[in-house]
Length: 151
Image (cartoon, rainbow, N blue to C red; front, side):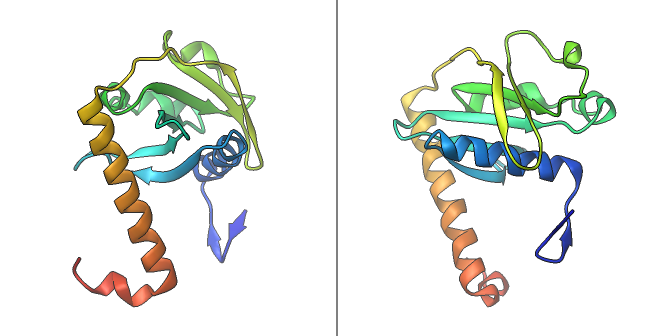
């Protein structure tokens, strides 16, 4: 599938459907969010009350098995989810995590992730970083030459 001339990978298509679903819940999302150097989550969602969800999108068994860093994302969210398509072997996914089934056009939570609330200082830092990354992306979208400037 193409998006603006780019060929989207299966995980990116799944992330798009997840973002559409989370937006329908009133959340705002960033794909490929970096909570700190060296970490990149597929989808970070921010709710109207400051709740923070992380969603890792897995397009295949091999994609899931090759990801050994997911537990490092737990400290950056209130709830952690896996997003997979309807053909994914969900018995591979760890207990105590949320489950979202989706495709390129939408998604649905099948298992709500348990809540483990962030400390106030961590929440503030994540929300500030979320806002900064969102604003920077908007600036680059409006003026692509901004990417050439050091910020």
